[in-house]
Length: 82
View 1 (cartoon, rainbow, N blue to C red):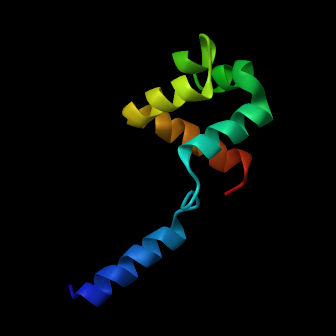
View 2 (view 1 turned 45 degrees about the horizontal axis):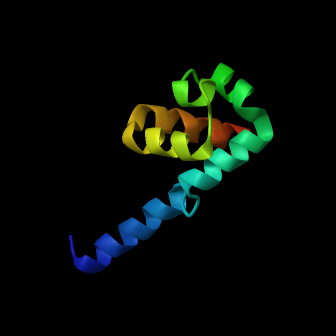
């Protein structure tokens, strides 16, 4: 594959990613504003949403835990019909 084709593939992948350009922090802020921590915890049972929740602690956990991040991103996509 030539370098030019790789660049086209990368652009194509970004165009197919509904979360391209949206940070995890933006996702969390939007979900917390829409649902609140209590409802977020009922939808996704992760401790950082149920025990002394904050954006900072949630970001720290989600950045280290791919399965939880995937659930949060999926909820964001459903909530925003992406």
